[in-house]
Length: 381
Image (tube, rainbow, N blue to C red; front, side, top):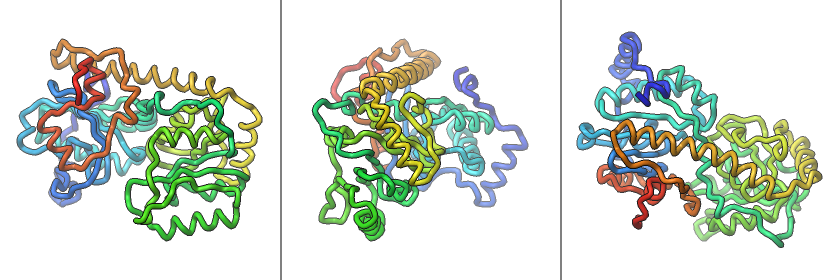
């Protein structure tokens, strides 16, 4: 069976006893708090059978699978679970394994597959007995939106597309002479700390430009993807400076726009894109980062070369993703198979929605446009 081929192993009696014991002592909740309306990424790829592709978030460590109620327990369903933060943490995986075991006991017709952003994540999940598939979700990034542009002046030595959060480590850019910053965020944060960061850069690095405008609510204003791509093309190099996070969409966007990349040692999956031709890994030190930027600029790597190599890597993983969906359809006895098309005109395949809306869509089996394209159904969403 597919799920076993992907590494799923039923719990032994001793493991099951430990999980049930932790549950009895209140150390392992069997389901998530469905009364709290949080957000999570979601796409419903197929309605029959139900194939739900969703993100793992703190309120839903089993993604959309944790949102289903009694009405779904007797319905076969496949849940593809994509982490929004690295799963390379044994304590976290022990909790996730426990929740997954309890979920399957309550919902025996449900199949869970963890869509891992790194090979290390997949190996750890296999070790814990969970089905895991190596698929860096940033391969969903749209090459139609992010691309090299002719006749755009390279005004910045480097650009960093990252919210102004401490773990993004903006201080590592201070030795770069000319640096641009895109810093939209979808969630509330400490406006005062953001303002302090911008003020510090104005003093210590006057060649740094913070591109997003600030709205009346004090939050950075969102730019459409086309404008983000324009600003990327104003720069010579893209920056990836966090030590740990989930898969980094900005890294894929840089490369599709033809920018070489400076990265620091990290966990989360952006190493998927590393290529010595146009990526340099440097220590988390401002001087090393500035020197790496200068070195990549000096190489004058053609943007189309970077883009084509990146697309080649993406296409191979997109094909593997289609093969996984085809394997699920075949196991369910469904004659339909995926189309050769990829929804390249969609900015992202997984879209953030409120849990209440996600629950309604799962129960209704409402297929997203990405699923319609992948399965060759061209009707409007």
